Length: 477
Ligand code: ATP
Ligand code: MG
Image (cartoon, rainbow, N blue to C red):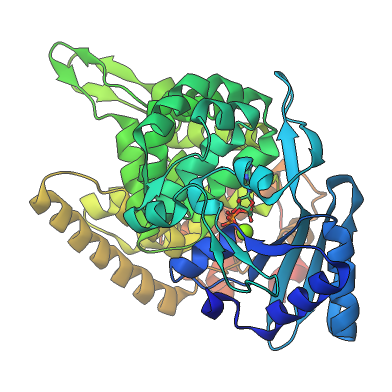
């Protein structure tokens, strides 16, 4: 495995370890990713002894080019090594862990290489490369991790019930790796997922959402969500998404299963964007369908207003899942609220005013909204999909043309509230908003051009209708 550790930094770690007479190994993710041909600059170094001592010795050797952060409570230390690029090296001492029933805080003791490999999550993560002088570069593979890596299998090193029960987050890691690497979870390990699913409730929401976000960012996120659903984990970590599953049938009429639809939309979108928050919008776009579902004997199933209720649900869901309550949340909320608008346009004759309205409402999110809507077409009927996509490209073309002409996306109507107040000698109040809205709507509808003079005239007329008297001086100006 010499090639994996040919960077000079590994030699320096090896020298530091020799001086301290500590056996040291590169373990886990770095070795796995190297063998998979995925370049990584995150290195985990395992010391049989104190990881912190080794980190400090290493940092001493490379001098100014490094920065050490020590986490005494965890017995770990992180070194940033700046040579030509940023390497992040985490040093840990080998551990032997045993867990209690209702806590994920393990009782930790010092251990051997073997103890440490035993407490790792999957065979593919147990591979260790020696940094010792006498066998520098030698691979230790006690659980057949190399073979599993080769055949694309996720398997726990010990009995999966023990591995998962000790730290239930490992269940999510199994699913995340399967989806990220395109691997299969071995059968006994899969069964243990279902058996231990309820244990996930002892894991913090922050650790859970970290893993879920990694699943969402994988190439085919539906793989992860299917497994989450099938194992019973989804019901516990994200019940609102679980609620999307199922088809109700009345008078022989069913509706589509919104869970499978949602994860299909997510997959579609994963092909066109790496934006985590746009992918979250896909997950949440139909989240209010269960709550708005009605059966109308004449027309069948309806989900009226699910986009508005869905947008309303977004903050609560973000809070519950420990997602950030900031502009990212607002962004997702906006996309959920608007997700039907381009479809409506694609279904009917597109007028300029409808396009202006969409540009105004979606603003800088117009392009992302179009990506979401295109991903939302999941019909099995190829002809139908083709037609929709064709209509969407008409909508896209129109969006570009109208934006070039009218510049609506970052647009502010030409008449401000201050102007309205000055013209009619008004104090701040409801009427100003009313007039402002009328002007904005007038321009978006194309009743008046997007220019100062016509908008000012329109304002005077509107004021008159509301029984207001304009200040003669202001009119002259
Ligand atoms: P990634 O960096 O893509 O998240 P990784 O496998 O490198 O994946 P890290 O969190 O960086 O994950 O952990 C490094 C190594 O530590 C893993 O390869 C694994 O051997 C071990 N490890 C991490 N988390 C756990 C856990 N919850 N249980 C057991 N071993 C773990
Ligand atoms: Mg890592």
